[in-house]
Length: 279
Image 1 (cartoon, one colour):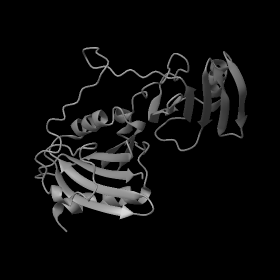
Image 2 (cartoon, helix red, strand yellow):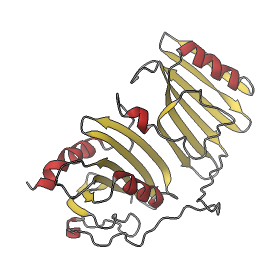
Image 3 (tube, one colour):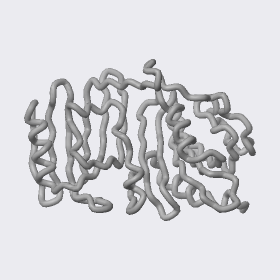
């Protein structure tokens, strides 16, 4: 097995076995620097996040007439105080249910205007010194506006180098949609497999000489108009991994992107990609 495969195969194995496009954070030292932004479409003025929040996951899902946005964050505030905070928020509208279940769970649901809101607060699966996990789901008419620096309402991405100067591109599996989900320019492909387990699934691994953030921004642009977008982070002994996913046409692309910090190694980032093909 060559050096490229030795370095990255552990990620491929984890990625293929889990079959999940979305991974949450679990970091003791790096997480403070790697918290996620508030998801597009989240109405902060309607259901605010408590001061001191650290987002670990979130997504916006456009289902046509109705959208859904959800966010999960950690907070260093005790369970009862978090529950009371959101009880007050939902009491401004139509609060259906609110209450503490045992010592570790607080549940609320109701409506504010035309939006349906569900909130789950727990003291489980915590990292660092946080006291609570807060999961908020909001359904309704949610507006998302993408803006570049010019304020034109669009996000631009340079695709001029996509699919160009790819080393070992012949390793890409048959049926890979290079036009819809391009390979980052200048990459080296080290692994490609096609599986048919009732659902056709493509697994690809490749390296880039550019840093992780550049690759991540590129694929955020690729998935800008995708449905069911998801984003997350996870901390492993080897470093922080970023996950990114979305559906374009009949393809679901799920990325795990990580830094490569090996002296003498030419590549700076590793990309593991799973593409599910829906018939």
